[in-house]
View 1 (spheres, rainbow, N blue to C red):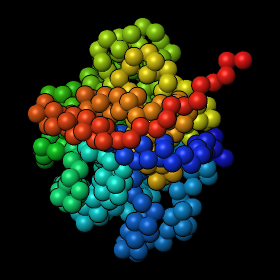
View 2 (cartoon, protein in one colour):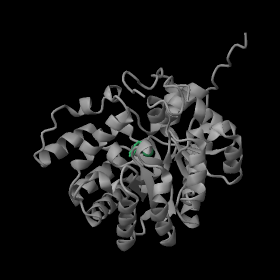
View 3 (tube, rainbow, N blue to C red):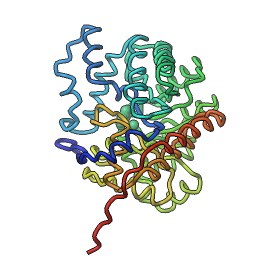
View 4 (cartoon, protein in one colour):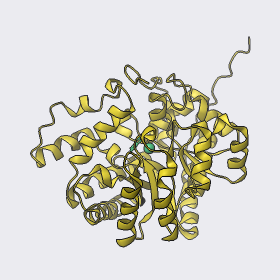
Length: 362
Ligand code: ADE
Ligand code: ZN
């Protein structure tokens, strides 16, 4: 696969849609901390640590220049290697939650951390920084946050077990569960069964990426890794039996329209977001987020905007996906009820846009 030359199809300015998507409250379950670092922050961190970047941050984030997902993931490595001490983690967490979150109406975010993406940084340092950043972000904007620790599927099962041991040994209430990220092609989910068992025994929730994998990987995630949700999971709709099971069990799928369109996982790179539409039509519990927002030229508002244009969805259909995210999130029932009330109030205060024009059947 080549990502070269691919951009998510641009959408026209439309004041009514733009006002609607900006005002809608949002709940964010699929956003990576490393992937949400703003370009200027990359430059600042490089300077702080005396690292020559070699290219401007804008070039670094030119997703049309990534030859494939592997190259994109190596850009993440460069950014991850610049986040080194607790102050760095506090800064990038704060910015992800405020300018990258609350400013777009995000009320709650479960931030995906990738400790293996920060070589040499002890897990307690990461934890200290992200908790401080989240505390400050909540104090300044009201956004709440939890954390998901991603195991790197490019590494061994033993390395994943070690990371879960770290998470369990340095337990924090805000760390709600684990995930499984980086290049799917390099790490079949079964390799991580032991790490996921350990997490389950410790009371951690579980999710995992399945973006390019076959529908059977969704089954493996549910049955062998004990996941209670799936990141992406677009191929589920290729298998009617597993789709029916996921509908019946209300398994959440955290979809990311723009990043997956650029990567040609959820459609054909043409902005139709075909698979997301199929998943919603099939009755699956779909949520919407941005994955690695500045790296894919998007943000939470823009991911909603592209669906409004491509699929003709307006306030109530988009708000239904946000309510799905409230159902899918890992807050306890009391906090979930508070979040749901905030979402409902925000939706009620959001102006709807006029319906999309009907297509001429002729
Ligand atoms: N960050 C870490 N792994 C990722 C993946 N597979 N896709 C997008 N962002 C990621
Ligand atoms: Zn992701």
